[in-house]
Length: 95
Image (cartoon, rainbow, N blue to C red):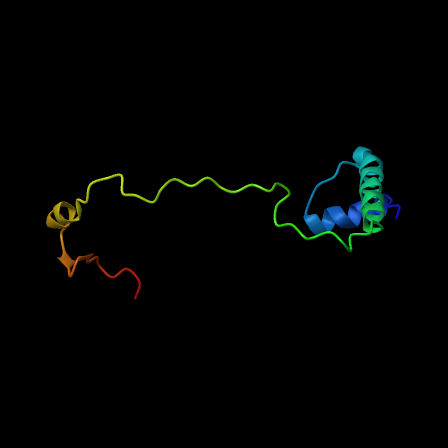
């Protein structure tokens, strides 16, 4: 599929982009090349290929889920203006 200047104008309008007149022919050629590559990729037989969520088969290294700070809840609630049943009470903001 070959694009021309009018197609670039339409795409730029939809994307709310300002494209300089001097660059429209180059952009049309670049977009045409991208669409040609996508059409070529669409012809590849992928019937035996399992879909991937990520191109790299990696697992995320996670740190152990352990507390690294001492529990200071009682101290912080003691200096809070208002608490009730272990919760902080704050003024109502939204009516």
